[in-house]
Amino acid sequence: MSRATAADRMRRVLAIVPWIVANPGQKVADVATRFGLTSDELLADLQVVYMVGLPPYSPDALVDVQIDDEGRVTIRLADFFSRPLRLSPGQGLAMLASSDGLLSVPGTDPDGALARALTKLGHALGVGDGDPVDIHLGEVEPGILDRLQAVASAGTEVELLYYSYGRDEVSRRAIAPWRVFADAGHWYVHAWCHSANGERIFRADRIESISELHRPASVRPDDAAEGGGIFHPRKDDPRVVLDLAADAAWVIDAYPSEEVTELGDGRLRATLVVTARPWLERLLVRLGPAAEVVGAQGMDDAPELAASAADRILNRYRR
Image (cartoon, rainbow, N blue to C red; front, top):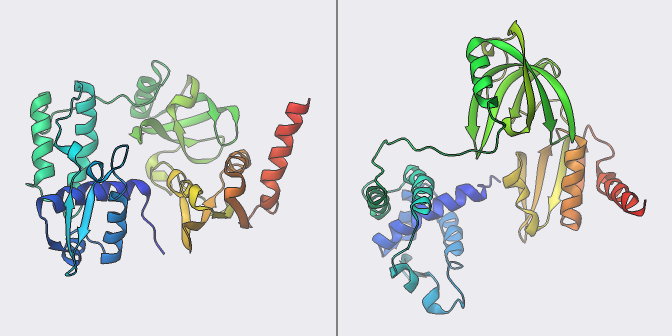
């Protein structure tokens, strides 16, 4: 069974609610069709809205969703929505930048309440349609991004001193940078890595130093089998199957999952690609009893990883 990520679902809810508020009394089936959902999916999304409110969570402080006997849905906003927000310019710009993407959700009215509110906010901030917005992404050592972009444009190679979070180690990497891009709040460089003899994605804020090798890139993007992206699992990478408790469902939103199955009561079974043993050990220790290894491919000792990692941690404290 496919499962939308938490971010996808929240973006959808934030687009659906203003439309229902502006168009009360529409049938559940019609609203679901408009937003490309089944009726059950829409009702599940609306369940989230019941929990929106402020302490002490009395009826006047909660969003009220009503569905009558004919299946018509109405949303009444809590009293606090009628109070004007006091936003700083920075807060307003952050809201505008994060909310503008909601208009791309299928079914959103391009001339509806949400679009009008974003237009008013933009006018108040002095930001017009199409105006560029500078966004700060991550902490990168000064000059590294400029050097990477210049090398990628020139088609030459560099050597990095790079910290790998998954392996928890610092190593030297000879790479041919292809492109520098931003994604999910961080800068990345897509490159050919000679050390790994394959395409790799490096996070720029984990580059400790960079030195030019003064040689042309031996592999260009057109010569590689795969395209760019944040994560490309390989066929020979180990896989691990985890049964996750309801409070550990965040794992499938935080890490790429190849297959997710709902087991009931909020529990999930997820197949994850293991790029490095230390990464999996840290994840399992963090999850504790909320995760159980029920299967593995290419990693026979996966069920014992959490226990062995925990023993090593305890031994360090004992010493």
